[in-house]
Every structure is written in structure tokens, then in C-alpha cells.
Length: 543
Image 1 (cartoon, one colour):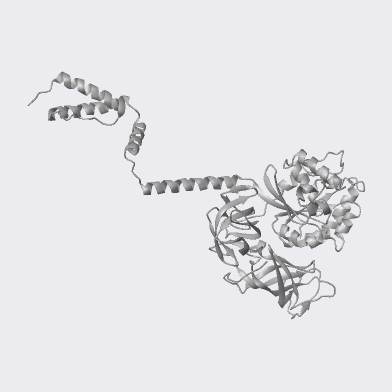
Image 2 (image 1 turned 180 degrees about the horizontal axis):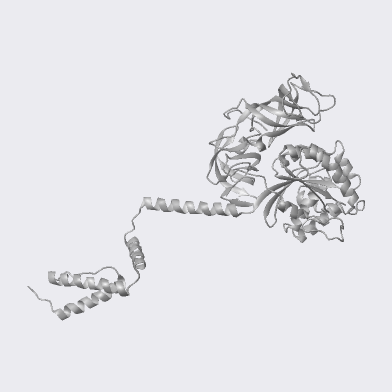
């Protein structure tokens, strides 16, 4: 039996203590030590642990260090742990996105409507200039271009009217789109055409809007032309109300014109003529309508209030102030998803454009396109010009989809949730108000017209008159009817050739209100009261 020199053993233990304090990797016991030595070494190790506990790293740090060493030396894959961590990260990310969405400025769609040449595009251009969306250099370029066409006063409109046909004629044809922000709100401007040939385009613009800006020209003769029968001021107001534009800002434009010169008499005359008409169109003129004078070309009373020197009798708000203070219509971010498609194109896949009327959408969602019942997956979402992970109701979106070809989507189709898809029908019951039938026409079963409902444009036929509504009591009259004339309110059954996606007005006002037009004129406005012949969405459709 060999004996261990105690002095040697103590020296060895000290060396081991030093080693252990340096690298925390445990004690290496020499193989040739006997049992006594091992026992003593173990005791020394216990002492060492106490020493390290007093003077070494904090336990958390030590544990982290040990875990790190362990991970580097012996990596162990724990799928359950990894999955849990991924789920936690995803939940945290979604929570952050939801918070960002909640803190985002509110969003409003504003449609500019009114008679041709009232100054809608010029006001739109001026808004973009005043809110910093267009710089001076661009403005100078547009001024030069307008001068070359001998149309000096059109340069502001060129910001909104971007195609050559619009610039050459000075008329808006398509619905122009632009974006600007104030301190509390993000706005999308929809510049609708005023010319009667392009009313269907105006309907498409107004169907996406939350609030309307009715532009009226104060210039001598121009207000009268727009307001009289055949002028677009009246038709646009009626259409806007039918299409769900619940709030209206009436801007009396061109107040700086030499024939007006900020005259209070002219402004009051216009207001007095417009108020009874707006009331008859269904607007509450005290709560839902605001009048104000401006000069779109000069930008007066637009972003800032005008001084008394310009217009001594006006002390009201500026146009931007009115826009900012308008109450937003209520929206349901948790309802079934509905996005009527207004346009589609190819861009690294199929892209559908539209305004979310209900519910929310996220990247990766599985949705369905009705009425052709095509399942699709959301690959990317673009709001204004930005790529976003999710979007709520009221937003104008471009959604990139997989699972469908661009040619299989038509305007009027609806991107919808799979759980509660939008109904697709070929027949429905509606309550109609007859506005103005064409010369000597009577409204009866067999009457044909063009139906405009959200982005759908379809030929339709009245197949049955059910009852006439008493305008005073709003209840059905007892007498049986075969035909009705102008001004009547009637419940009738309407049939379309192809399946269309609509909802009852009481469930979804945005997808349940419509207009009937014939030969370029609006003849009736109505709302869907019952759905017949609901299909599962396998019928073909065209818009």
C-alpha cells in the first residue's frame, strides 16, 4: 500500500481549486489516487464549491454559462421546446402588429363628386400640394404643360388627371386615386368623373367612399347648369346617398372668380337652393352636411382658415379642419370578411383590388372568391403603397393571391371568409324608389335596366311587382299593382342572368344598396330586402 505525502496532496488540491475557479468544468481526478485521496479530494471539492459560491459568478450567470457550454458541447434538439418558443414569438409579433394597427391613424375614403368643370380634380391636386405630396418642381412642370395646351388654369388638375385623354379634354374619365394625411387621419382621395358619359365610373368611386365632397362652382351660370335638370349635381347627390356616402361636405368653389368675388349673396343663394334638394335626397342637413366657401385653384380656405381681409363674412373652419372633425362610420373588424373586387391585374401572381367592407385580413389567410367558389391563399397585402401583414375594414387594398388565375376574377366578385361566405344569387327581392323614368315609360314586370351594386354591373329584369309602399306610413298598400310611375316606392322581385354576390341591406348596407340605370340615366335607387335562389357559388358570373 503506498502512502500519500500530505504536503504534496495539499499542493495538488490548491492547483485543482485554481483550475476549477478558472474554468467551471468540474474536477479531473488523477487515476493513480487511492480511495483515501479521492475521499479527501471530494471533501476539498465541497470546500471549493463553498469558496466559488462566495467569490465566483452569480448563480444565474453560472447556470447560463453551464447551459451555453452544454449546448456547444452537446447540442440537444428539443422539438417541443422549439415549437413552444416559435408559438410565443408569433403571438408576441401578432400582438405588436395588432397594437400598431390600433394606434394607426384612422382611415377615410373621400370621393369628390359634382358637375363637370366644377373643379374637383383641381381641389384634389391642391390638397396633395398643400399636404406635401407634390413638390414645387412638379407643379412648375404641370404649369408649363398646361400653358402649352393653352389651359393655364388646369395645371392643378394634372396632379389628379394623369392620362393624356384626361389632360387633352380637361375631363376626368377614370376614378383618380391619391393619398394624404392630416394630424389625425389618413385619407384616400377618389376623384370621380363629373361628365354624364362616365357616371358608371363615378358609381364605382362612390361605392368605395365613406364621405363625399360635393364640389359646386359659384361662377355665374356654372352652378345653374350643374343644378338644373340634366346637370350632374343632382344625379351625383342621389347616387352618393344610395351608394352609402352618409356624410357630405359641400364646397362652394371658384369664390375668387371675378363674377363672384367672395360675394356672400351668391354663397347664400347656392346654399338656399341646395338645402331642400339635399333633404329630399335623404340627407340630414343639420347633422350630415357642412357648407363652406373655398378657392381650389388658389388654395384659399383649404389647409388654413382665410383671413378677414379675403372674406370678411366667413369665420368658419377651413376644409382640412372639417375633414379632420368628421365622425367615422362604425366598422366591424371581427365580422365575416368581405372585400368586393373592383379591379385585378398580374404582378408576380394574381392581385385583386378593393375596399374591405367587413372583417380583417392577414397574410397567410385562406379565403374564398365568390360566386365561383375558388379557394385562395393570401400571399401579400398592400395598403396604399405599403406592404402590411394585416388590414381591417375601410382600407383600400391590393391583395396578392395564389390558387386563382387573373382571368378567372371579374369586377364585382367578392373576396370572402370561408366560414361565412357571401351569398351568390340570381334573384332577389328589393325595395325601390323610382326617381325618373325615361319619356312616357311605365315601370312594370318585364322592365329591363342595368343594375349597379357595389362593383357589380349586370343587366337585370323586374319579374314581379309585389306591392307599393305608402310614402307617409312606409307600409305596403293593400291594392294590387300592375305598374307604377315616377316617385313611387315599390317592393319587387329582380332577376339577373348571372350569379351576383349581394347581401340583405339590414345585414350589410354596403353590399345591399343599388341603383338601376337605363340609357345613361339613373331611373331608380333601392335596397335588397330578401335573397332568393342563393347558390353555393358554382354558377358562372360576369360583371
